[in-house]
Length: 169
Image (cartoon, rainbow, N blue to C red; front, side):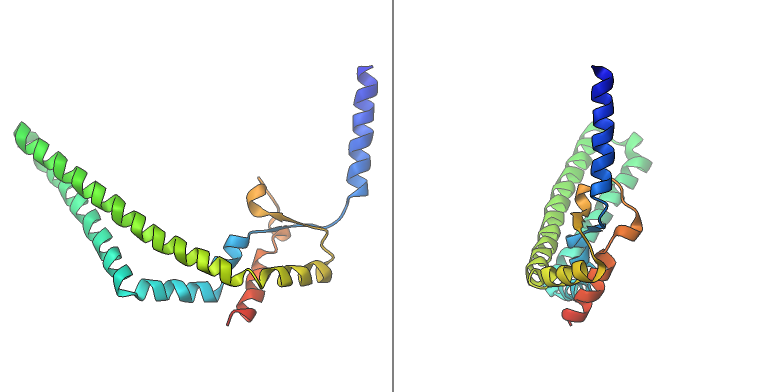
C-alpha cells in the first residue's frame, strides 16, 4: 500500500511539472517604484525641505551627544561618584528617548513619501506588466516577498523600473 502511494505521488509530481512548464518571473513592486528616477528625485526634494533637514540635523546631533557621553563614561567613569554615574545614565536615557522620537518622525516622513509614490505609480504598473506578459510570453508573476530564492534572470523588476522611468518623467 505504501509503495502504491509513493508511486502515485511520484507520477502526479512528474505529470504536474510537465503540464505546467510555463514561464514564471519574479517582481518586486515596492523596489520597482522606489528605484525609479522619479522616486529618487522626490526623495532628494524631501531631504531639501527645511523641516526634514532640521530633523536630520537634530538626529545627528543627538547621536553625537550620545557617543560623547559614552566616551566620557568610558574614560572617566571609574572616578565618578554614584550620583555622577546616575546623572550620566539619566542624560543618556533622555537622549535615547529624544533620538527614538526624531528617528520615528524621519521614518514617518519617508513612509508618507513611499505611500504617495506607490499610489502615483499604481496606474502605470498593471499596464507595464500586461505588456511584458504578452511580449515575453509570461505565464505567472510571483511577488519577490513570497519567494525564498529565485534566479536573478527571472526578476523582471529592473525592466519594470526602466519602463516606469519612461512613463514617470
